[in-house]
Image (tube, rainbow, N blue to C red; front, side, top):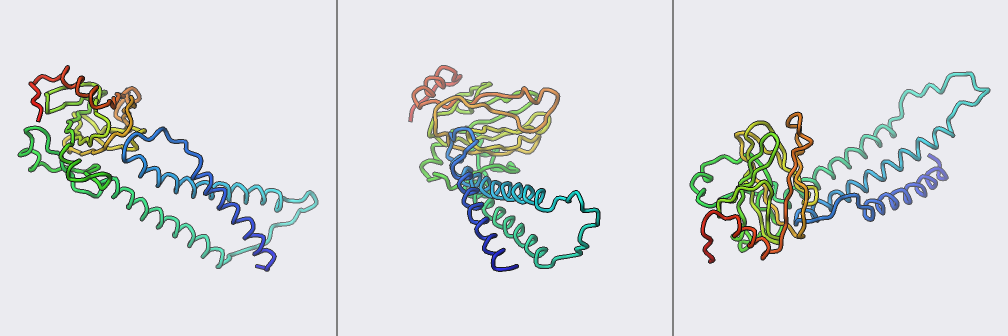
Amino acid sequence: MSTRSALLTFLLVVPLFAIGIWIGQNINPLPIDASTNASVYDELFRVLFSIGSILFLGFVGLLTYSLFKFRRKPEDKGDGLAIEDNLPLEILWTAIPTIVILFVGLYSYDIYDRMGGMQSLEHAGHNHESMVSKERIWGGIGSGSIGSTKESLNKELFIEVTAMQFAFLFHYPKGDIISGELHVPVGQPISMRMESKDVIHAFWVPEFRIKQDVIPGQPTILNFTPTKAGKYPIICAELCGPYHGGMRSTVVVEEQKEYENWFEKNSKTPITKT
């Protein structure tokens, strides 16, 4: 490659990277973030969006340039050049994707770990300690490092989630409440033990940036902490049958006093304040 070509390539690549990074950092197509997991997940999304923007703009630009630069001239009736290989180019286009994939893989692992995916899975709801200690939990998001102090873990709200065709049911062991909506107080750690009664479902709240499969006979755990009051959709993200698209519910994140009023109104057992 000549010095002129190298300089021209450098002058084109630098703005390409700058524009791609700017797009990834400043354009956010995601819904609002409403849990402690969201800000951590969004870090990974911005990195992936930046990489995707750079690749998209680079390939589109290169393709557009090639369409004009190397198009066949009207008077050209011959065959193209017989190019068999280009070792430096092959090394380059093998090395760059390898580096990108390794980086994304390691960074994704770090994000998953910070969200609690590599932490121990625990869920010890009301009067269920002995049963849960012997039960095999298959996967999920545990009590991760996001605000998981010993004090916050002791304040966890334990909820049992049952998925079936085509609904979610939420059982609050403390209070013995069964609800078709998930009510949680803002700022309080939530620990959900989830199991399906029929086929594989998935519990997904886009605003929380969390999704976890709900599997028959194989309990999974999902821990999160809501940060913004409001109503957010719960969506089944696993094809579970003909009415899969209608399997939805709502998570209602309320201020503490509003949640306590809802809890006392629906509780079947006397509430003793500690």
